[in-house]
Image 1 (cartoon, rainbow, N blue to C red):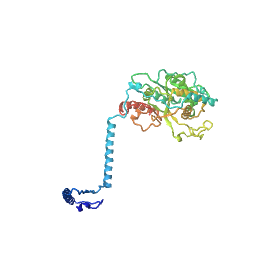
Image 2: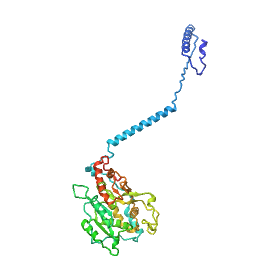
Image 3: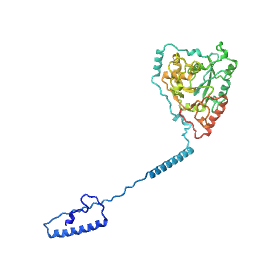
Image 4: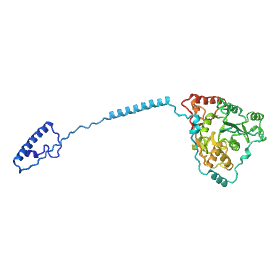
Length: 422
């Protein structure tokens, strides 16, 4: 009886018990309890309580994963995931086109509308500008060409292309006429756009205002696509030439979009027409390759540089962001506002920067688009399914560019037309 009062290993003491020893102790304890029960039954007045507690703890050795095993598993996982990604990406590129083409018949129904952000209340902004600068900086009416050679804007065109040219650049104009200025649809003679070449007075005819050469006069008669100005045809008069074209467009054309470009550029007119149809309700539009870097917008003051600007004309050190003059799109509402306020903004000889100044005055933000490129080399044929304007194109390259634009549409199945400006 007394043996049961003592714990096997001491109170609260941790110990490891041999299973056989535990079994023996259990049997011995059971026998003692039985004997005690018999004794208790013989002496009813005697009551005893016995509590037997066994605490068995199994101490297992903790498993530890070695650093080498973990590193090996990690490297294997990364390699497997990378391999699966490469295989999946290859399959996607091979069997699935990157663009979900939208059928032409559904363009108008599903088209997205692109409306450029602008500052509110543009008209009140113009009124404040006129009140603040009541004196005219220049008069646009003085640069308009002779009335003896009027040019009419065709009706029902979707957009106008103003091409800055020079009287001597006949080969460039001819190359453009037989390529991207003609109809893109071989089954119809209708052209949904109109090309207009803007030309000033020849240097050889100085002192003879409104006189033009016989060669140019014949070209005007045959093609009827030349807008003549009264300014001399020099690089530093390019701003006058551009504003002349925009003024004429505002007065004579009902097209909602105008593209300004130069005669050393290629224009993918077929692709541009598709985009304009898709965004024909756009307003406050000013799109091109935007110069945002400050070093590219720095004002040049050196008078020996052809791009220099005097402080009296523009006092700040940098121009606001503007689209490159190689090509940019304007909606007609923006053109109308440009023509209205240009007389109050001092002329500078940097044409594209001047357009940026007008846009800043009106609160029109230029939209950058990679579809306007300043380089002619390094492009594959399928890039012509994306590019709208390409700069530095010689006249004998226009036919090749025009052909590639058609081949890109027919042969580059994974380069379907993207109907956004970017």
